[in-house]
Image 1 (cartoon, rainbow, N blue to C red):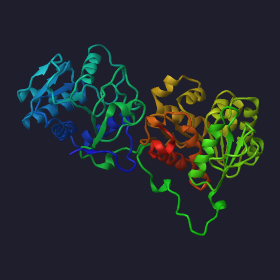
Image 2 (tube, one colour):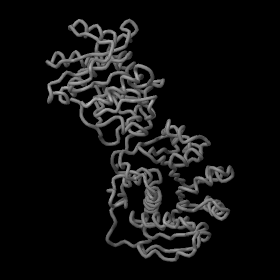
Image 3 (cartoon, one colour):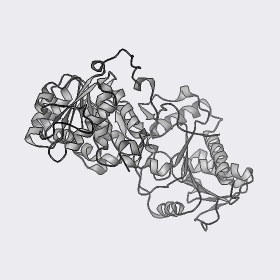
Image 4 (spheres, rainbow, N blue to C red):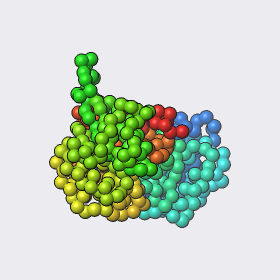
Length: 474
């Protein structure tokens, strides 16, 4: 029986990885069909989703192996007493070998195949087997019409492997995509299910490894961040402690009209456990925070030259000549540096600053949203969102930095090529100030001794699991 995910930090497999697993399995087990196992798993889950109404199950089978999985599921469901209605526009003579055998087995069992969609009423479930991993084109024409019709139905939809039309590697919708209630993915988890449009298309995720020996699975650089591992946790504090043991965070930002951004970052750093926090606000009219009077204040120039253990630069800083000079000074800071907001925009617009950031010896953390990421890479926001993993890794490589590309399924990329997709959070974080909180949280964890990359992952997770009320969101 497929089980709902997630487990502890499961690996992420791209389409090329899945094809490699298939080839390795076929070479070692030529007489055991993974398609039969996938179809059986799909039928078992489908039976639990469709059993309450007693209506027939509509099975959509595409022209590839995903369609073969669906045909096996239809045959298995029929053997269990369910009424399965199969619709497919595929040419059986052009199907891949395994899918061709699944088609023949369905017909041999007495099943029929409709070339067009039937009247879409009275069904208890739709099984989406139109397109699987590795889709290389946009869905259009009659296939797009089928997907639109499925999305308009009032019964649940179970997608096999990935919702049809969703790019399994990037989470980008290729023209249009099925918006499933459940997705049963096979062998391993796919990154596109967790970032971009994936979470809105996949519904409840289930994983079935099809009994493949874990030793056959290739090592991959990506993981799902679905909780805190031991490396994300700080050691317990001794009773005999003092504030100097938990780091000093400096925050530079808060130009006139944007003071709140600096205050939010500073408050978040204190709340996350930093021993002390000093704000260097560009608006010098502010000298105390009456909400959080523990915050200290200094001139931003003084803080840039002596920013304590960790320096966070950018929240509400603006892009003035003064802001440029402050960032230039901060890049020489000998300790860890967290750059957000206007610090990122200044980097994007100045090759000398960008080069200085890439030469830093101490850890650098960048936390762009998609627009800032586009400016850092000299491209468009649409291109960034088209492949968020590639974009995050590109920024990480360019600046030799740990990068959190914020958004649905925040991608945390590291200079060594590893990446994680965060699964906590939700649309309530889409508001002003959310990124400033994350900046302060990251800086605080680093100040307390956590590795910069681990601190970025931990902060992303903790930021997401905070309730809307605790973050100030509606």
